[in-house]
Length: 170
Length: 170
Length: 170
Image (cartoon, rainbow over all chains, first blue to last red; front, side):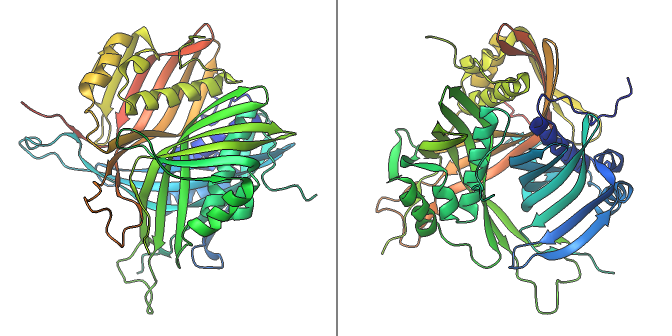
């Protein structure tokens, strides 16, 4: 039994496609380039747009499962100590036509930063989770998929950000 | 092929009803009164309550698909420049009985405001999405639907806000 | 008709399990120990971990449906006036094997605090929902379930918090 982790056994194609999205967000949050690459076809294209100011503006694109996996490791910042992220998706709209499909989701990304416990322990008044959770990105993902045996692979993935994006210079 | 955009081809009634919710939140965020109206019956009722302080308090109601669509355009503030919203829903509970159904969801609404890029570009230290994403509303939506051919239409939609609501005066 | 509220009539086991999660978050937010207990087997185990700093660290555990229900009432703080919470879940991954199943979800918990309306009403500039909605907890829940007649009951529920946790002293 060495089936890849992303094989999906849902009872409907819609459900299988929801779970490709679920695997995608986990790969992003775990900065797991290999798991991410396994979700895409070799010719897949990822395009990233900023759409919050009128016409969509292309921020970047990546082609091919291997490059997409490498981008997760190379372009996404590693989590700092006690840090994590949650890419979350909502209100999926799935359309299946034979062996191809589309899925449209809303997304929000949260930045999670845990507080460092003081040497002598938390202060007397402290109670509950210690740290901050901040929504930092939002938008829509529109994805095309193709059935490949008992799996669905992403052929096109368009990320539309509501917020403008600054790239570090230097 | 001029099928309306909200026709749903999911494999189960539960899934079809999830996608009515998905169409509802997109119509709200796009301030698309026509798309919103198309989800309701002509006699549908929307009721909005504040439920955070003991007994539910009725804030307002609207009757009929046309009026509901007009309310989206007339009562929801237009997005400012670089602004957007996300009405998001979670943890659906769907009950289908023949040609009627109910769906109970949790909701959160986010206000998204993009930063304006300075004339000379983002400052050297800037990295990532520029702007703020703030949760501004939360609660539960409880919705009744009726099957109409191969579609589900909303007959009753009860919005229960956790937070009290102030209406602009003047 | 006195069927318990958590009986689920979804068309697929995956859907039924989604709705166990939906019932779980509602029981948590309503501080409804009885509704919570009804979701678990008598021998069920809940384990709570902090996972944000390397190795998972066990924060606590509870065994048995009755004790789990009592923990909801006894360990979760009651909502203050105009206060509420939303335990929300995203991107479910469900695996069913005969009469057992697992579900893996992302979660976020929001703290909702309504503003108190001033004696003379909201100030002239006030518009929209009045109060704050703050994400305070996040992480993953991994749950095992067993089919029992036409229901699924939780046998094991592992909560993994991203943020460290302080317990009130005294």
